[in-house]
Amino acid sequence: LPLLQAAGKKNSLNLLGLTEAELKEQFIRGDGPGGQATNKTNNCVVLKHIPSGIVVKCHQTRSVEQNRKLAREILQEKVDLFYKGEDSEVFKEKKASEKKKQEKKRRAKENLERKKHFKEMQQLDKK
Image (cartoon, rainbow, N blue to C red; front, side, top):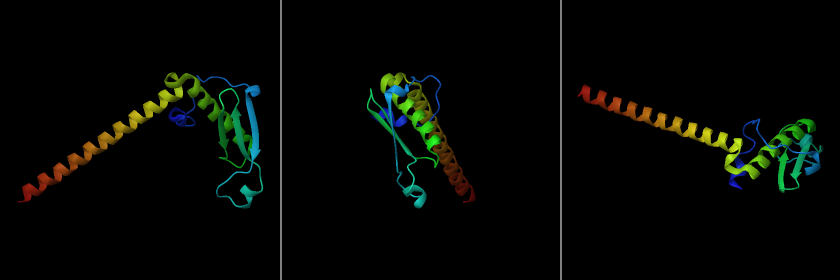
């Protein structure tokens, strides 16, 4: 299950395909902020991939069609992760972005140490 959390982040071209026969689609009322617009419209899409049992709920926009499209993209990535595991493009992209983030954090820490050292040297020069 932790692998599936990587889905929905990036667009990949090399994903497993989905057929409409494998999908079960429902439209429900969304939750969260939005007041009457949310409470009276069924524009939240719940999409289930029957063979794997993966369920995606998408309520990112007010448009049912856009939510349907987004739900299919996210579900496709999750199904790809489910079947391919660490060989999936989505997983590789997630790992690469984590590595990039860690490198950025390390450089920021080095810069902070350099600045701190520079200020200490200035304080010593003044005395």
